[in-house]
Length: 377
Ligand code: NVA
Image (cartoon, rainbow, N blue to C red):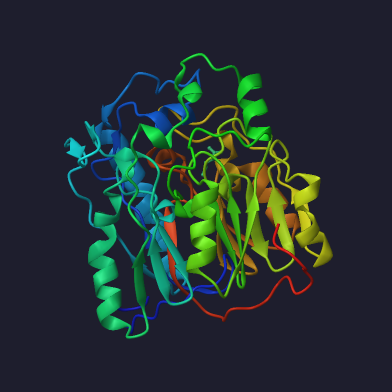
Protein backbone atom coordinates (compact mmCIF):
# COMPACT_ATOMS: atom_id res chain seq x y z
CA UNK A 1 0.00 0.00 0.00
CA UNK A 2 1.23 3.51 -0.79
CA UNK A 3 1.47 5.69 2.30
CA UNK A 4 0.06 9.18 2.58
CA UNK A 5 3.60 10.52 2.69
CA UNK A 6 4.26 9.47 -0.90
CA UNK A 7 5.04 12.40 -3.12
CA UNK A 8 2.07 13.60 -5.16
CA UNK A 9 2.63 13.74 -8.91
CA UNK A 10 -0.21 14.73 -11.19
CA UNK A 11 0.34 13.02 -14.53
CA UNK A 12 -2.12 11.15 -16.72
CA UNK A 13 -2.35 11.21 -20.51
CA UNK A 14 -4.66 8.38 -21.39
CA UNK A 15 -7.16 5.85 -20.04
CA UNK A 16 -4.88 2.80 -19.77
CA UNK A 17 -1.28 3.48 -18.67
CA UNK A 18 -0.24 1.91 -15.32
CA UNK A 19 -2.28 3.53 -12.58
CA UNK A 20 -0.48 5.03 -9.58
CA UNK A 21 -2.97 7.42 -7.94
CA UNK A 22 -6.73 7.87 -8.30
CA UNK A 23 -9.75 9.53 -6.72
CA UNK A 24 -12.69 7.26 -5.80
CA UNK A 25 -16.04 8.98 -5.12
CA UNK A 26 -18.32 8.69 -2.10
CA UNK A 27 -22.07 8.07 -1.86
CA UNK A 28 -22.54 10.07 1.38
CA UNK A 29 -25.58 12.33 1.29
CA UNK A 30 -26.41 11.45 -2.33
CA UNK A 31 -29.68 13.01 -3.50
CA UNK A 32 -32.02 12.58 -6.43
CA UNK A 33 -32.14 16.19 -7.61
CA UNK A 34 -35.46 17.84 -8.50
CA UNK A 35 -36.38 18.46 -12.13
CA UNK A 36 -34.40 20.88 -14.27
CA UNK A 37 -34.09 21.14 -18.05
CA UNK A 38 -30.97 19.12 -18.87
CA UNK A 39 -31.59 16.50 -16.19
CA UNK A 40 -35.22 15.88 -17.21
CA UNK A 41 -34.10 15.31 -20.79
CA UNK A 42 -31.83 12.49 -19.60
CA UNK A 43 -34.32 10.61 -17.39
CA UNK A 44 -36.08 8.02 -19.58
CA UNK A 45 -39.88 8.29 -19.90
CA UNK A 46 -40.36 4.90 -18.19
CA UNK A 47 -37.81 5.52 -15.41
CA UNK A 48 -38.79 5.02 -11.78
CA UNK A 49 -37.02 8.34 -11.12
CA UNK A 50 -39.64 10.45 -12.93
CA UNK A 51 -41.17 12.92 -10.48
CA UNK A 52 -39.07 11.71 -7.51
CA UNK A 53 -36.44 13.72 -5.73
CA UNK A 54 -34.80 14.08 -2.31
CA UNK A 55 -32.09 12.35 -0.27
CA UNK A 56 -31.51 8.71 -1.12
CA UNK A 57 -32.28 6.19 1.69
CA UNK A 58 -29.52 5.71 4.28
CA UNK A 59 -29.31 1.99 3.61
CA UNK A 60 -28.78 2.61 -0.14
CA UNK A 61 -25.96 5.02 0.72
CA UNK A 62 -24.45 2.42 3.03
CA UNK A 63 -24.53 -0.34 0.41
CA UNK A 64 -23.02 1.96 -2.25
CA UNK A 65 -20.29 3.09 0.11
CA UNK A 66 -19.44 -0.51 0.97
CA UNK A 67 -18.77 -1.17 -2.75
CA UNK A 68 -16.84 2.08 -3.19
CA UNK A 69 -14.73 1.19 -0.14
CA UNK A 70 -14.14 -2.28 -1.55
CA UNK A 71 -12.98 -0.78 -4.87
CA UNK A 72 -10.63 1.42 -2.87
CA UNK A 73 -9.22 -1.63 -1.07
CA UNK A 74 -8.78 -3.54 -4.34
CA UNK A 75 -6.85 -0.63 -5.85
CA UNK A 76 -4.73 -0.11 -2.73
CA UNK A 77 -3.87 -3.80 -2.63
CA UNK A 78 -2.42 -3.33 -6.12
CA UNK A 79 -0.26 -0.43 -4.95
CA UNK A 80 -2.48 2.40 -6.19
CA UNK A 81 -2.82 5.44 -3.92
CA UNK A 82 -6.52 6.31 -3.46
CA UNK A 83 -7.94 9.65 -2.32
CA UNK A 84 -11.58 10.40 -1.56
CA UNK A 85 -13.60 13.63 -1.93
CA UNK A 86 -15.10 15.61 0.95
CA UNK A 87 -18.91 15.53 0.71
CA UNK A 88 -20.86 18.71 1.48
CA UNK A 89 -24.53 18.88 2.44
CA UNK A 90 -26.19 18.14 -0.89
CA UNK A 91 -29.75 18.37 0.44
CA UNK A 92 -29.79 22.18 0.69
CA UNK A 93 -31.21 24.46 -2.01
CA UNK A 94 -28.51 26.18 -4.03
CA UNK A 95 -28.72 29.31 -6.17
CA UNK A 96 -26.79 31.70 -8.35
CA UNK A 97 -28.10 35.10 -9.51
CA UNK A 98 -29.63 33.26 -12.50
CA UNK A 99 -31.42 30.25 -11.00
CA UNK A 100 -32.07 28.19 -7.92
CA UNK A 101 -32.66 24.50 -7.39
CA UNK A 102 -33.81 22.60 -4.31
CA UNK A 103 -30.83 20.25 -3.97
CA UNK A 104 -27.52 19.09 -5.37
CA UNK A 105 -26.69 15.51 -6.42
CA UNK A 106 -23.62 14.11 -4.60
CA UNK A 107 -19.94 13.35 -5.15
CA UNK A 108 -19.85 9.77 -6.30
CA UNK A 109 -18.74 10.32 -9.93
CA UNK A 110 -15.54 12.42 -9.99
CA UNK A 111 -15.01 11.47 -13.66
CA UNK A 112 -17.84 13.83 -14.64
CA UNK A 113 -16.29 16.84 -12.92
CA UNK A 114 -12.50 16.56 -13.23
CA UNK A 115 -10.42 16.08 -16.37
CA UNK A 116 -6.77 15.20 -15.79
CA UNK A 117 -4.47 15.81 -18.72
CA UNK A 118 -0.76 15.65 -18.09
CA UNK A 119 -0.03 17.69 -14.97
CA UNK A 120 -3.31 19.61 -15.23
CA UNK A 121 -6.58 18.88 -13.46
CA UNK A 122 -9.38 20.86 -15.08
CA UNK A 123 -12.77 21.41 -13.45
CA UNK A 124 -15.47 21.03 -16.12
CA UNK A 125 -18.19 23.64 -16.62
CA UNK A 126 -20.89 21.01 -15.94
CA UNK A 127 -24.29 21.38 -17.54
CA UNK A 128 -26.81 20.56 -14.79
CA UNK A 129 -27.66 23.21 -12.23
CA UNK A 130 -27.71 20.58 -9.47
CA UNK A 131 -24.05 19.80 -10.26
CA UNK A 132 -22.79 23.38 -10.56
CA UNK A 133 -21.19 23.36 -7.08
CA UNK A 134 -19.95 19.77 -7.08
CA UNK A 135 -16.35 20.86 -7.64
CA UNK A 136 -16.30 22.02 -4.00
CA UNK A 137 -16.07 18.39 -2.86
CA UNK A 138 -12.76 18.03 -4.71
CA UNK A 139 -11.17 21.31 -3.71
CA UNK A 140 -9.50 19.91 -0.56
CA UNK A 141 -7.71 17.33 -2.73
CA UNK A 142 -6.87 19.76 -5.53
CA UNK A 143 -5.47 22.27 -3.06
CA UNK A 144 -3.32 19.53 -1.56
CA UNK A 145 -2.04 18.38 -4.96
CA UNK A 146 -1.25 21.99 -5.84
CA UNK A 147 0.83 22.31 -2.67
CA UNK A 148 2.59 18.97 -3.03
CA UNK A 149 3.34 18.94 -6.75
CA UNK A 150 5.06 22.12 -7.96
CA UNK A 151 4.21 21.24 -11.56
CA UNK A 152 0.49 20.64 -10.97
CA UNK A 153 -1.83 23.00 -12.85
CA UNK A 154 -5.23 23.53 -11.27
CA UNK A 155 -7.61 24.97 -13.84
CA UNK A 156 -11.35 25.64 -13.89
CA UNK A 157 -13.37 26.19 -17.07
CA UNK A 158 -15.63 29.27 -17.07
CA UNK A 159 -18.66 28.60 -14.87
CA UNK A 160 -21.72 28.73 -17.13
CA UNK A 161 -24.80 30.84 -16.44
CA UNK A 162 -27.14 27.88 -17.09
CA UNK A 163 -30.12 30.12 -17.77
CA UNK A 164 -33.04 28.81 -19.82
CA UNK A 165 -31.15 30.04 -22.91
CA UNK A 166 -28.89 27.00 -22.49
CA UNK A 167 -31.70 24.50 -23.14
CA UNK A 168 -33.89 23.79 -26.17
CA UNK A 169 -37.57 24.19 -25.30
CA UNK A 170 -38.68 21.22 -27.44
CA UNK A 171 -36.78 18.88 -25.09
CA UNK A 172 -38.84 20.04 -22.12
CA UNK A 173 -41.91 18.00 -23.06
CA UNK A 174 -42.79 14.94 -20.94
CA UNK A 175 -43.84 12.92 -23.94
CA UNK A 176 -40.94 12.68 -26.37
CA UNK A 177 -40.98 9.33 -28.15
CA UNK A 178 -37.80 7.27 -28.44
CA UNK A 179 -38.08 7.54 -32.26
CA UNK A 180 -38.13 11.34 -31.96
CA UNK A 181 -35.15 11.27 -29.62
CA UNK A 182 -33.17 9.08 -31.99
CA UNK A 183 -33.96 11.41 -34.90
CA UNK A 184 -32.78 14.36 -32.86
CA UNK A 185 -29.57 12.60 -31.78
CA UNK A 186 -28.81 11.66 -35.40
CA UNK A 187 -29.37 15.29 -36.41
CA UNK A 188 -27.20 16.41 -33.44
CA UNK A 189 -30.10 18.34 -31.96
CA UNK A 190 -29.55 18.00 -28.22
CA UNK A 191 -31.15 19.54 -25.13
CA UNK A 192 -28.28 21.99 -24.70
CA UNK A 193 -28.00 25.02 -27.00
CA UNK A 194 -24.86 26.84 -28.06
CA UNK A 195 -25.45 29.82 -25.76
CA UNK A 196 -22.13 29.28 -23.94
CA UNK A 197 -19.43 26.57 -23.64
CA UNK A 198 -20.67 23.51 -21.77
CA UNK A 199 -18.94 20.23 -21.09
CA UNK A 200 -18.85 17.46 -18.53
CA UNK A 201 -15.43 15.85 -18.15
CA UNK A 202 -16.91 12.38 -18.72
CA UNK A 203 -17.59 13.27 -22.36
CA UNK A 204 -13.83 13.38 -22.96
CA UNK A 205 -11.57 10.38 -23.66
CA UNK A 206 -7.82 10.89 -23.51
CA UNK A 207 -5.56 9.28 -26.09
CA UNK A 208 -2.28 11.16 -25.46
CA UNK A 209 -2.07 13.92 -28.07
CA UNK A 210 -5.66 13.31 -29.14
CA UNK A 211 -8.84 13.97 -27.21
CA UNK A 212 -12.10 12.38 -28.37
CA UNK A 213 -15.15 14.29 -27.15
CA UNK A 214 -18.82 13.33 -27.37
CA UNK A 215 -21.22 16.01 -28.60
CA UNK A 216 -24.50 15.37 -26.76
CA UNK A 217 -26.72 16.57 -23.91
CA UNK A 218 -23.91 17.49 -21.53
CA UNK A 219 -21.29 18.80 -23.98
CA UNK A 220 -22.02 21.27 -26.77
CA UNK A 221 -19.91 22.35 -29.74
CA UNK A 222 -18.83 25.50 -27.97
CA UNK A 223 -17.60 23.37 -25.08
CA UNK A 224 -15.58 21.24 -27.51
CA UNK A 225 -14.19 24.39 -29.10
CA UNK A 226 -13.28 25.69 -25.64
CA UNK A 227 -11.38 22.45 -24.93
CA UNK A 228 -9.54 22.70 -28.27
CA UNK A 229 -8.46 26.27 -27.49
CA UNK A 230 -7.55 25.36 -23.92
CA UNK A 231 -5.36 22.44 -24.99
CA UNK A 232 -3.63 23.87 -28.11
CA UNK A 233 -0.98 21.12 -28.13
CA UNK A 234 -3.70 18.50 -28.52
CA UNK A 235 -5.97 17.50 -31.40
CA UNK A 236 -9.61 17.50 -30.35
CA UNK A 237 -12.08 15.30 -32.23
CA UNK A 238 -15.84 15.53 -31.97
CA UNK A 239 -17.81 12.28 -32.08
CA UNK A 240 -21.48 11.48 -31.68
CA UNK A 241 -23.44 8.26 -31.40
CA UNK A 242 -26.76 8.32 -33.26
CA UNK A 243 -28.17 5.19 -31.56
CA UNK A 244 -28.24 6.82 -28.12
CA UNK A 245 -31.55 8.50 -27.21
CA UNK A 246 -30.01 10.00 -24.04
CA UNK A 247 -26.44 10.91 -25.03
CA UNK A 248 -24.50 11.94 -21.96
CA UNK A 249 -20.99 10.84 -20.99
CA UNK A 250 -19.01 8.78 -23.47
CA UNK A 251 -17.87 6.05 -21.09
CA UNK A 252 -20.75 3.60 -21.53
CA UNK A 253 -20.51 3.96 -25.30
CA UNK A 254 -16.89 4.02 -26.45
CA UNK A 255 -14.20 2.56 -24.18
CA UNK A 256 -10.50 2.40 -25.10
CA UNK A 257 -8.83 -0.56 -23.40
CA UNK A 258 -5.23 -0.35 -24.61
CA UNK A 259 -3.39 1.25 -27.53
CA UNK A 260 -5.12 0.00 -30.69
CA UNK A 261 -8.28 -1.41 -29.09
CA UNK A 262 -11.68 0.14 -28.31
CA UNK A 263 -15.00 -1.47 -27.44
CA UNK A 264 -18.04 0.32 -28.89
CA UNK A 265 -21.62 -0.08 -27.71
CA UNK A 266 -23.34 -1.99 -30.57
CA UNK A 267 -26.54 0.04 -30.09
CA UNK A 268 -24.55 3.27 -30.35
CA UNK A 269 -22.18 2.59 -33.21
CA UNK A 270 -19.62 5.24 -34.14
CA UNK A 271 -20.81 6.51 -37.55
CA UNK A 272 -18.77 5.47 -40.58
CA UNK A 273 -17.68 9.02 -41.36
CA UNK A 274 -16.09 9.30 -37.88
CA UNK A 275 -14.09 6.06 -38.10
CA UNK A 276 -11.34 7.29 -40.39
CA UNK A 277 -9.03 8.48 -37.60
CA UNK A 278 -9.13 5.03 -35.99
CA UNK A 279 -8.96 3.01 -39.22
CA UNK A 280 -6.09 5.04 -40.66
CA UNK A 281 -4.06 4.37 -37.51
CA UNK A 282 -4.84 0.65 -37.18
CA UNK A 283 -7.08 0.94 -34.15
CA UNK A 284 -9.60 -1.88 -33.88
CA UNK A 285 -13.13 -0.98 -32.79
CA UNK A 286 -14.92 -4.12 -31.59
CA UNK A 287 -18.55 -4.41 -30.50
CA UNK A 288 -18.89 -4.58 -26.73
CA UNK A 289 -20.57 -7.63 -25.20
CA UNK A 290 -24.25 -7.27 -24.33
CA UNK A 291 -25.00 -6.33 -20.71
CA UNK A 292 -26.00 -9.16 -18.37
CA UNK A 293 -28.96 -7.15 -17.02
CA UNK A 294 -32.18 -6.06 -18.72
CA UNK A 295 -32.73 -3.06 -16.52
CA UNK A 296 -30.56 -0.71 -14.47
CA UNK A 297 -30.88 -0.97 -10.67
CA UNK A 298 -33.69 1.06 -9.03
CA UNK A 299 -33.53 4.87 -9.15
CA UNK A 300 -30.54 4.90 -11.49
CA UNK A 301 -29.84 7.55 -14.15
CA UNK A 302 -27.72 5.32 -16.30
CA UNK A 303 -28.46 2.60 -18.82
CA UNK A 304 -27.61 -1.11 -18.63
CA UNK A 305 -24.50 -0.26 -20.64
CA UNK A 306 -22.63 0.59 -17.47
CA UNK A 307 -21.36 -2.93 -18.20
CA UNK A 308 -18.79 -1.19 -20.46
CA UNK A 309 -17.80 1.38 -17.87
CA UNK A 310 -14.59 -0.37 -16.83
CA UNK A 311 -11.42 0.94 -15.21
CA UNK A 312 -8.03 0.09 -16.67
CA UNK A 313 -5.33 -0.59 -14.07
CA UNK A 314 -2.73 -0.93 -16.82
CA UNK A 315 -2.87 -1.96 -20.49
CA UNK A 316 -3.22 -5.63 -19.52
CA UNK A 317 -5.44 -5.39 -16.43
CA UNK A 318 -9.04 -4.23 -16.13
CA UNK A 319 -11.52 -3.86 -13.28
CA UNK A 320 -15.08 -4.72 -14.37
CA UNK A 321 -18.40 -5.21 -12.58
CA UNK A 322 -18.67 -8.70 -11.10
CA UNK A 323 -22.18 -9.58 -12.34
CA UNK A 324 -21.49 -8.48 -15.94
CA UNK A 325 -20.61 -12.00 -17.02
CA UNK A 326 -20.66 -11.32 -20.78
CA UNK A 327 -18.38 -8.31 -20.50
CA UNK A 328 -16.04 -10.21 -18.17
CA UNK A 329 -15.88 -13.04 -20.68
CA UNK A 330 -15.19 -10.70 -23.60
CA UNK A 331 -12.39 -8.93 -21.72
CA UNK A 332 -10.88 -12.29 -20.86
CA UNK A 333 -11.03 -13.35 -24.52
CA UNK A 334 -9.37 -10.07 -25.52
CA UNK A 335 -6.42 -11.11 -23.37
CA UNK A 336 -6.84 -9.02 -20.23
CA UNK A 337 -6.37 -10.01 -16.62
CA UNK A 338 -9.87 -9.25 -15.35
CA UNK A 339 -10.55 -8.17 -11.77
CA UNK A 340 -14.28 -8.50 -11.05
CA UNK A 341 -15.66 -6.22 -8.32
CA UNK A 342 -19.30 -5.90 -7.22
CA UNK A 343 -20.52 -2.39 -7.99
CA UNK A 344 -24.24 -2.40 -8.92
CA UNK A 345 -25.24 -0.94 -5.56
CA UNK A 346 -23.22 2.16 -6.42
CA UNK A 347 -24.65 2.67 -9.94
CA UNK A 348 -27.60 4.83 -8.86
CA UNK A 349 -25.25 7.38 -7.33
CA UNK A 350 -23.67 8.24 -10.66
CA UNK A 351 -22.40 5.29 -12.66
CA UNK A 352 -19.92 2.45 -12.65
CA UNK A 353 -16.18 1.98 -12.27
CA UNK A 354 -14.92 4.60 -14.73
CA UNK A 355 -17.49 7.18 -13.59
CA UNK A 356 -16.72 6.62 -9.90
CA UNK A 357 -13.03 7.37 -10.32
CA UNK A 358 -10.73 9.94 -11.84
CA UNK A 359 -7.05 9.66 -12.52
CA UNK A 360 -4.44 11.64 -10.65
CA UNK A 361 -1.39 9.75 -11.85
CA UNK A 362 -0.61 7.09 -14.40
CA UNK A 363 2.88 6.26 -15.50
CA UNK A 364 3.80 7.27 -19.02
CA UNK A 365 4.10 10.30 -21.23
CA UNK A 366 2.10 12.04 -23.91
CA UNK A 367 2.25 9.77 -26.97
CA UNK A 368 0.92 10.21 -30.48
CA UNK A 369 -1.36 7.22 -31.11
CA UNK A 370 -2.78 8.68 -34.34
CA UNK A 371 0.20 9.87 -36.39
CA UNK A 372 -1.69 9.42 -39.67
CA UNK A 373 -4.25 12.20 -39.83
CA UNK A 374 -4.61 15.24 -42.00
CA UNK A 375 -7.50 17.04 -40.39
CA UNK A 376 -9.69 17.21 -37.33
CA UNK A 377 -12.92 15.22 -37.45
N1 NVA B 1 -25.01 7.69 -21.30
C1 NVA B 1 -24.55 6.78 -20.35
C2 NVA B 1 -23.98 7.32 -19.11
C3 NVA B 1 -23.15 6.31 -18.44
C4 NVA B 1 -21.85 6.72 -17.93
C5 NVA B 1 -25.56 5.71 -20.14
O1 NVA B 1 -25.49 4.75 -20.87
O2 NVA B 1 -26.44 5.79 -19.27
